[in-house]
Length: 368
Image 1 (cartoon, rainbow, N blue to C red):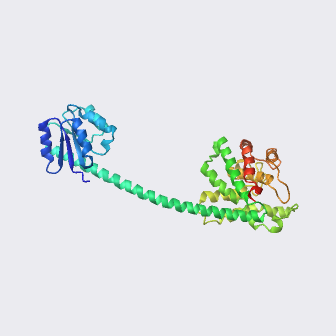
Image 2: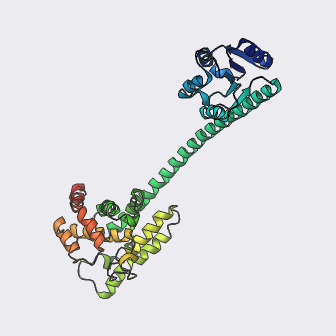
């Protein structure tokens, strides 16, 4: 609706008539003789009012009382108010501006000034409202675009996760391990990661990072895809040369991940590369392939290293039976499976029972 109305709230009949006469050729002018009447007429004509001229000294309700009531109802953001007064003190003007008055008209009137003030206020306020409408429409458009982009991103992420699971399952199939090995590794990783996040905030882990690390852990053994069957499926003891080939799955896996350029997620690729290459490093520097030690090994690789050992211990293999959770826990914490970060072991202790529940929940026989 067109904003073509001026509301004059003025108790002095002569002053009110002068203001009506000054603007009636350009605007529809509504009159009110006191604050209470003015509020009623404002509410009745709100959608068409361009500006309110509000006198300070009035019976029933003075100007500030009107502003007090209207500010509580948020009216002062919808319509500009100009206060009419003969007061000149800075404190008086400051109080009006604090309520939301846009400008002042001083008595006695200089109608050239009065008209200019009104025109300026109306013009600025209407321009402001147009900008607000434009911004609101732009926000709606951006929201729609973001929703489309989010759907596309979610679809791409889902496709990426399907690809990751497919690649990792191929490796586990060749290695004669359960397809649920990958699921367990991911769940163990997130579970232990949350314990580390809680106990050691200096590692700067977050739920979002742990979600990415969990998915990246799925590719920890991707390098085994290039290991010959006669070595990877051997049930007996490996020769030193064969063990050297097996160990190369870490560097081969990192090379494979480097070539996954179609996965447009740098954080995921960085985690996946690091985990694939370094999940066999050990805290004392006696791991492989780079002989990293202590905090040279990223916390992500340390976490996957421990959970990979735990899953191997609690899972049946062609060369061994599965250990129960308590036995696996003791073997890891007693150093029988290599040296781990004491902090990591403390975090592992905190989730010992959670790991045992995950073993039961994702037991191979339960999914047969």
